[in-house]
Amino acid sequence: MTWMSIQSGFCFGDVALDSARRQLFIRGREVKCRPLAFELLLLLCEAKGAVVPREEILKRLWGETYLPSDESLTQIVHRLRTTLGEHGKVVRTVRGAGLRLDAPVVLIAEEPRMAHLPDLSTQPVKTAPASPSTTILPAGRGLRKSHAYIAAGIAMLLLAVVLPALRWNTRRSMIDPGYGVTVADLGSSSKMTEDLVRRAFAAKSRGDRAQAVNLLETAHRSDPSTPIPAAFRALWGSPETVEGERRRWALAAQKRLTRDSSPFAQLLVRYARVEAEGTAGAVRAALSALLNLRPDAWQMRLGRAHYNLAQRRNTAALADLKSIPIHEMSRGVGIVLADRASLGDLAGAERAFKTGLLAGQDALAWYVRGRFARSRLQPAAALDAFNHAMAEGIRGNQPDLALDSRLLAAISSFEAGDPAGAALRFDQTAAAARDQQRRDRESDALGLGAYLAWLRADPAGCDHRLAEAFRASPPGDELQQASLTLLSLWTGGMHPANPARVAASIDLLPESLGLRSLLFARGALSAGRPDEAGRLLRQALAEGIETTYFAEEAALLARQLGATVPVPRVDPPYPNRLRLAAAWEIQRLGHPVR
Image (tube, rainbow, N blue to C red; front, side, top):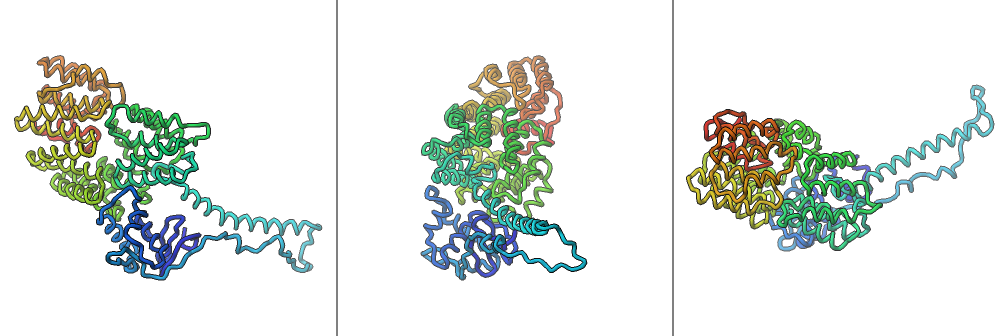
């Protein structure tokens, strides 16, 4: 694709914009441009030199329901000027008014390419006079051959015009390439629904889950013909504040399926159902089916990587991550790079990071630097990076990223040798998570804070945090309940959950193999029955506990029973962040985590 194929857009100087394909060219070469920066440049081009008020820019870039900070707009303007290079000076700030483009802008009008072609059906066919060496064909045969050549030429010209148009229409119909969602998948003719869903994806990509969920709920209420908003509401609603809410949204999506629903919509709703029911094997199968239908849907591939990760299938997870075309992604690059580093591809992830993939995304760039530092076993550097990521995330209205960075900063603070500072950070993280209604992060922070209270011989502080962690645990999250129960058993805390009851609630899934036996083993040791604990631990190991993210808990129990069990390094720092406490305790007892 080159600038010569632009069908509609604008140009000024050496710069050309393809508004249909969302491409930017400088001196005939395509230049990568972030979506919001491109949208700002397009808006300025449309104004053709007139000043565009700040309010209009904010509405165009972020919509009426989102109120970004002045710093957010400043970053977008800086990113645009950087992208334009020497042409960036034409983007002028008019103090107290807005922005304007200080350059003559030319409109590239969209027009049918066939209008420039001659009407071959009315053109006389010229033939050369016969010569002695010319073979005379039977009457009509030469004419038919000429017509064949003409028809072939017309077909080639049509292909040259139609194929780019088809690609253009495909891109325009794509609502979100990460999930592979198209306008046709909505099953709705409402432009308002399309706009709401597009805005929901944009909010999700900014790290504002709350706004994305609100937009999806609005689309669902206003348009009863489409299952897509409810399906993504089920997928994005985790963690839920009301038990069973994800399942209810998935069922609401299923009720809207019809015979005319697209295959993608049907598979997506199935994925939402099995995701809400928490059956990892079925989730992976549903994701694979979606990827067979939309192989370029990188967000689905990332989801499958994380389900492989949940079962410690690290090789399969890394293969999925490395197959994601990060240079074509508009979001999600940071998580892919960070996870690749955690799974052993640190060198490759750092090389990709240095190409500037996260230019202008300061919060995410600092988050990735922090993850890289953890993978290099440099906790002090990780702490510094996560502090920067948290501050930039708060400044840039990215609450999810800021909260994750805050929790990882607390973890890194302890790993850097500052338990008192880490304890304070965990309490602050729990409070911030409570404000954002992120029960999973609140429960994690309280659980790890309980371990630090136990370390400083503060049983009351440990018991209080454990009780709060159980309260905050997302409804229906049996694995989190099991993690907290194990932690409360080996710290001697007052545990509100009975081990036998928790064990009975756990489904036999790949990510929970051997967990029931481990809970009974830990309960036996707490009751002073080490022989029974050893027998049950051997049973848990035989059942596959080492292939789950409870392997650290099994290793700690083995260490306390006098044995040594190799413990993997805790990277990535999920799933099951509470396993960090078990790994830290093993390290404290003289068995460093590898």
